Length: 239
Image 1 (tube, rainbow, N blue to C red):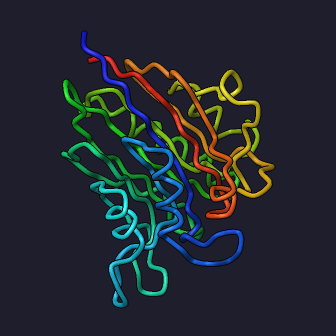
Image 2: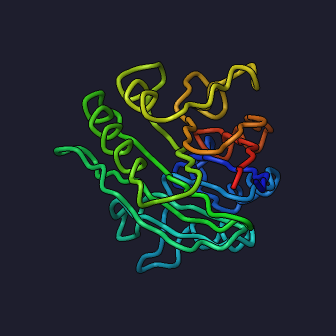
């Protein structure tokens, strides 16, 4: 068996609007540059539109990373949704509708990334805010992740909008392995960024995955750049 060590991040960047209400995608890129991640899952990203290329392209260019976007809806005529960035080649990309009734459109994206001896599947998620909505989304997501036609270790990460263990956590926990932050960090809360009170951002996985370390960068810049903190995981994949 061969092993690959990776650093991955999930980060809700809140349209690149910081706690000071300034919209600065370059500040998001600066926070991520200090993390030096191999793969990054972003939520609430402004993509291309009539007035320009959007924040996804500028953040990717600043970090020197390739990226793919899964827009869930439009925001001021720009695409808006999830983005996966990677230092490694992205070989395949798909998205899965998680929209529920009349709530805000939501989706999950899957990026298949070649990391040397094998391929890892990254699922980037942003759940809704209603309890029944999250229960529906958790079931849909778990079924999608368990598709046996998609092979390789699977990492599911993002903003699950569930601050205490609930129905969505229970559904996902039955079918996926959950990363427990407690052994790694004293403070597990990621929202709001300047004074975190809630633990909304989570990581799940399937397959030959070892969680080696978890961190929550709490620099002054990270506390200001978004209403979330980035959640960083150092993992080892076996192929």
